[in-house]
Length: 282
Image (cartoon, rainbow, N blue to C red; front, side, top):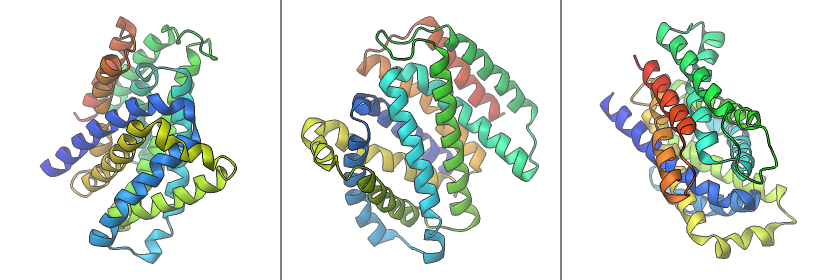
């Protein structure tokens, strides 16, 4: 259990780091995602060859995971193009473990406990605070409610891939490294097909955003693989909640590195979301 907690917390720190980095490349769209996916694939492939234990039957599940991860990345980029990390990240990460809990209730009959219902109320208060937070100057979406909707959409994709990948790794015994490595290959093929006319623009990302692309290529696999291995040593709901502690790190990094405003509403919403995550662990 201790190892699982440590891996989940390491995943949280890496996740906060790559999300704040993603904000810097959000305006580039899919080309930036293709460039970081290519480098990540190059970095992860040796790990798959050395330590992976692929199973053809289980790897057939990878395309489903890839679609969910790609949808998540697309929603995240679109949201960060118009809103600050401090607006999107707290709710999207705070809502995700609750959605996993609701999914467990619906699919497995695992009904919400009292602490989970309290977490729902805390997140409701966080939403109320962010609804009164003004979007960035010049944003195409003038109403704060749009940030809430994007946060909810991101949370849905997080809950979907977390539940599916956890099921594949824990219940079906998929090897985490092989599962993720093959997923990167499928994602790279998918993005190449979608960007076939914009590939020169995608290649240009290596020159225009070298540091950010490399950082994303390192932190995204680190966050994901640490999270997957954590599910082998701790319950899925606990891993999801601990990974959501990254919202505390993300808010701090966004304020220090991206110079985003950290007013009382965003601070309060972040603390409420963090309290919701902690409450779920009770």
